[in-house]
Image 1 (cartoon, one colour):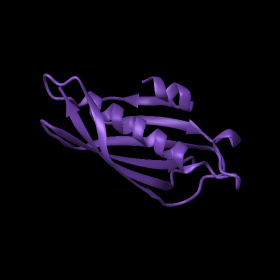
Image 2 (cartoon, helix red, strand yellow):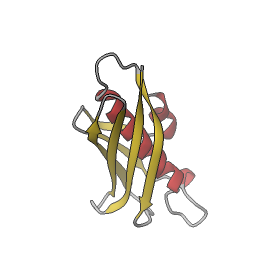
Image 3 (cartoon, helix red, strand yellow):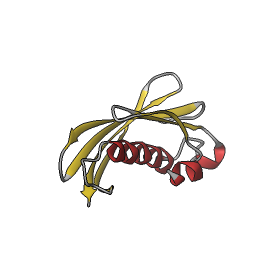
Image 4 (tube, helix red, strand yellow):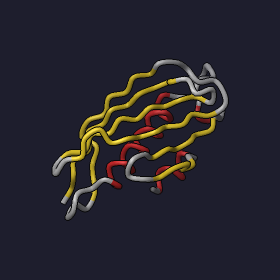
Length: 121
């Protein structure tokens, strides 16, 4: 996935059951207050979720497109890294729903994203 390279993410696990990506904290990815920017965290979660949906495409499908994404930020991240673990909740003929948890370097839940992906044909 080209966007993960632009974002600076690293793939840790890639499979139909789970896609796990890591993003290192870096000052260039932060708010003025030194916290990892929500857009960076959302971008990481969206990439993991999209990859998960793609790996779960039904026969005859060519890809997916995000049609809905809900993000809950639970705490700020001021160092270390974050990891996004995306798992399919529902794999259907026309829609795939993916749940992505984002944890910090200490294993604390810092964000949760649920997305619906339309199946493209």
